[in-house]
Length: 292
Image 1 (cartoon, helix red, strand yellow):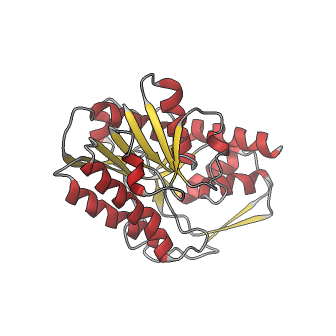
Image 2 (tube, one colour):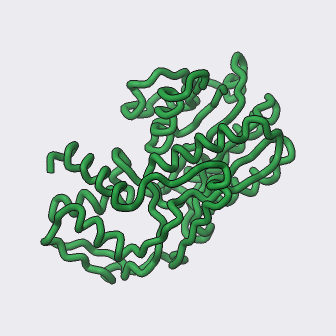
């Protein structure tokens, strides 16, 4: 299978690229990146690539043919990006690829979406808009949308919630300001997200058109209060005061998230990491790289 992938320099994309390159003979992955992208996460891997800021979009398909496009590139808006910048990454880029994919006979388009409601942020709104376009194009290509819950694991960005909480608790900060923490979330370990995408690639090779959405999570919800307390326990932290209620909930904050993985389970996927094993592995990594 020949795959064109965006977001390979990010956390999820790099883990997926590593799995495909190292474990699947016959899988050829071409990465779309920018000439100034930090390739630290994938520098040990062998893959073809295009620097999208150096070529025209049409050149992506000039000499190569692809069976699948996997869109992992995401702008969360955490660095105060403008709405237009978020839309460029989360809507315009994948829509251009979707158009090209259809015109060049690509069989599968996999999109990484969010389970969050569209009203939570510009990020979630832009993701939902592209989901609508996927449905529109589904009569010409097999479109698979992944509604991702909160994934985490070793090597994730320090701006992400789980990594930030772990690092602060490992450093034994005096106190940690949090919301009331009554909202529930489904935290899923990165390896299980990657295995879900691999299963979907394998199971959809012979399907020509259509639209399908898969929730990606562990299937088990936990409150933020319980989760942070669990992280504190695994960090062996007896000193940090967890100041629940110090900060307000976000506008349109979803209070309950329930992930339904039944359709994914029917395809043979299962969650192999529970919350404890995933956290222990991630905390072990953070201790090692930060010498804490």
